[in-house]
Length: 306
Image 1: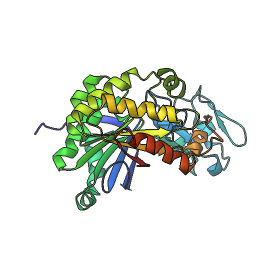
Image 2 (image 1 turned 135 degrees about the horizontal axis):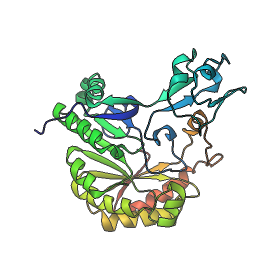
Image 3 (image 1 turned 45 degrees about the vertical axis):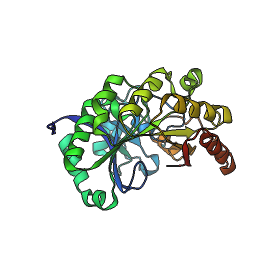
Image 4 (image 1 turned 180 degrees about the vertical axis):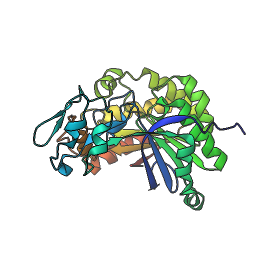
């Protein structure tokens, strides 16, 4: 078996235990920072930047001004509540170290593969009992390809099932190098319309389409479609995605439709950012059922959620 370089480091923003989604059985999900997309509905905006960053929970702030005293960039405005000028803040973490209530904290930290695996081993018994395992998520985990690859290699050395949540926006060379270590790929196909895709995610989808074809030829792949009002929640869009999968991804048999939710909206305030889809309604169940039937009409298995 290929040796693992446990010294490789990457930036992690969360490790979530006892998940029953994002792969079979009971899983631990490791969230890596960094993403080339800027999806307007993103439920993990703290994942988008590639570095640890300051988050501010104003409801915990007691106005002690300790943060202002130590900020080398004078990025914290004297207001009630305080306001961080993100154009000045360089995420040095000085303010978080003196905050007595943790109103200011860092999201993301540098970890080695060895440290990650040490955390994963705490729940190893559950993986074997439930036929579960490890899922890498983000952000886009494969924007840290060396780190992700070594984590997967370490997991396979332990005999753990491996999975990844990914949007496919990377060179196919990365696919060929890493996919052999992955048991299940949960691949987002958000839209087959390039203009629409760029408007709502910030990037064109040509690279994603090419990666999707290669991924499904190497790894067990399930396609997931975040279904968003005003973006792709229409019969035409869902039909277009189903057609693309049927014609270009012959090894894919399952599509999961993920209904829009706004669970991550509060995180935008922590980062001093605006949530662009505020007041966007949820999709009615009967509408999701219509989309499900469209997918099934192409001979594909379809579930709502997943």
